Length: 63
Image 1 (cartoon, rainbow, N blue to C red):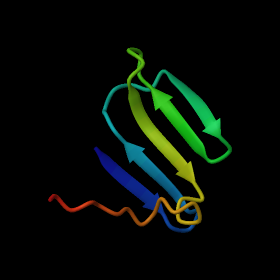
Image 2 (cartoon, one colour):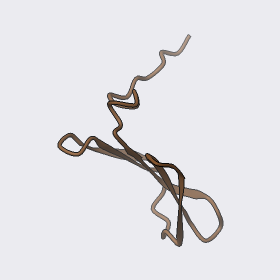
Image 3 (cartoon, rainbow, N blue to C red):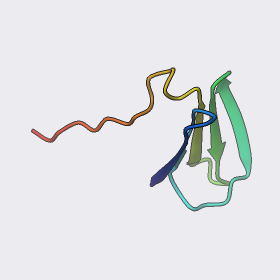
Image 4 (cartoon, helix red, strand yellow):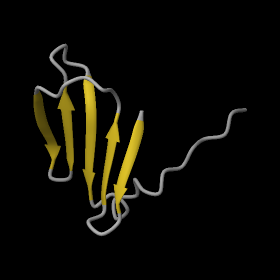
């Protein structure tokens, strides 16, 4: 998995797999999910990511 953040447009793209995208679905006005042929999630795009609190990413520390 890797991510790309576009600071100018405040867009966060989370690429989960390298599978080919065959369909996309908007969950709401700022969250879009792309799926592979086997219905697994390939990519999540979040618009206004920092305004929505999704960027910068924060990682939980292991106990």
